[in-house]
Image (cartoon, rainbow, N blue to C red; front, side, top):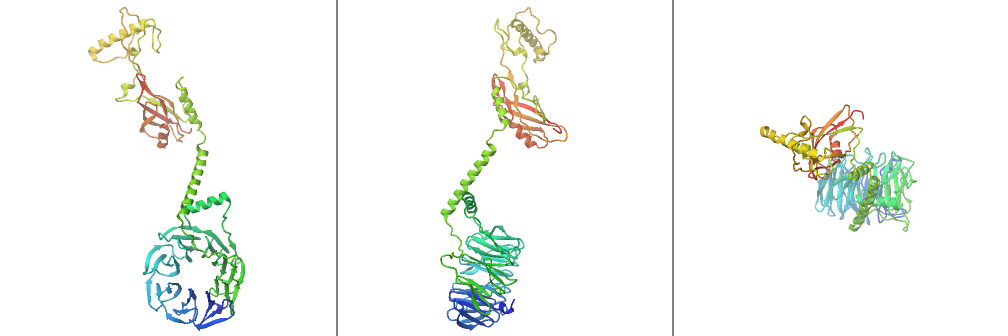
Length: 560
């Protein structure tokens, strides 16, 4: 590359093309055919910053800046802090970023100067919403600076060594080549809001309407990715894309060489390869061996310095020109509408998924319902689980007597001549005699021990006829114990037989309401969850279902 080209900087303005060379400055007309004026310049121009009626030529080596009036070419040269690298015009004042001085300096229209100190190694200066943003590369800090008053308002710590910074009014974007990502920072909160993975070695970024154009020299490509947006916006947009087949993602652009800079002007995409000095429009080469600042792209087209200024690309036709990138304004109704669409879509998805998962009754539940329906007509015996054994054990303690089966003497008396109808009945006269004999023995025993003896424990012929007539005592209805009808159990793999011992409380409806664990097993929560689904035929007292207590031993067999 010609070393002379590296010392030439050009910039397109609304009055023509400004060309800065060593010690001189000239303004060409828009056709780049005539020089409108010449003026004094700086020794080694590095960058030109412009506004509607002013321009500033920055010399990073000589620490100088020359501010001129574009219409006349008259200007002033000033010394700056160490290593000025970038600048921005705001309210007819220029803000100059001085890297080695670690300062952002403001130069007023009357020449007054003031500065604020920024973090180490400031590398990029951007403006959005009337505020300035400085990214310090070594320190890893992004700072927001107000112009009135001129002071640092907010700061946020980010990763160091980003290769580019761009700000669109809502978010700041930092490009990290090593991490192959773009970090986003919300301007509203000044906090990191996530990362966007892109390419292999992204190095430069430009805004392309609502997308981000990212230069990747390793892939020889400009990637087009979506910028940061709210969840409702992203979900609604993706849902509508899939539903309507509209709004497909922008196409990436491939290049023959490794481009490391990307510029978007209206609807046109430009890329630059600094290693060869090649400038592309879309994928077409429009200039070769051009210095990094020896071309300028603006609304009027593309100008390139090649021993003279020439217009490499004419301005786009007005009919096909697209507006410059402007962040879309926030609309309350739009956010609410997109949120409603996203919510409705989530409800539809949840309904479909729920139908697929729960639309069919499990066979185990159907079997349990069939057992409960048949329990009113005939007794049902449950088949033992192939994985475990369940043993019901009488409880002890204060409730023990309530669970003991009543003696045979409490069977209801039969009317004379009526056939017996209970499991222990005899002919009515024999049963009456046996009951009277048992009563007499109880009364005799009570005189000495004051206790009751179960007549089933007596020896001898319990039902011999008695010569002494007796009448049956008044009987009370028996109490029945809870009966297990439905016992789902989990599959728990164990290396050896193991038994869980539980005390259950069963309510009058046959549901398990309380579980006390006397001896646990592995994965006990799973066992308890299954036992809570057990169903009992409830215990009764005087024919009325009552709450009862049941002890349960559940044995899990090894390798079943």
